[in-house]
Image (cartoon, rainbow, N blue to C red; front, side, top):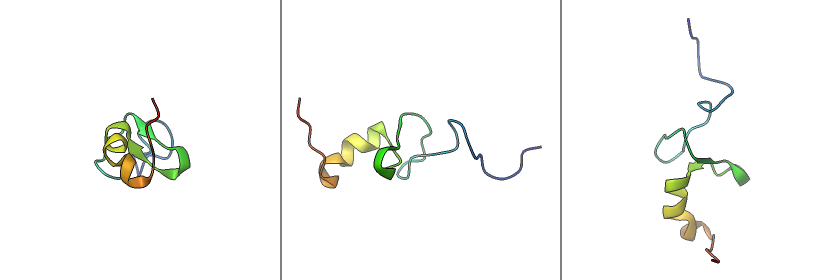
Length: 50
């Protein structure tokens, strides 16, 4: 029987915006999936150089 929230592994962290578990950007404590990160990165101050 499973009890409580998953503590480690791929399913432990989810995107704060959409809840997706895969493609998570955890650097700097962002915790967004790559799709959500691409949408709101300019608002957060990230710039695309290439």
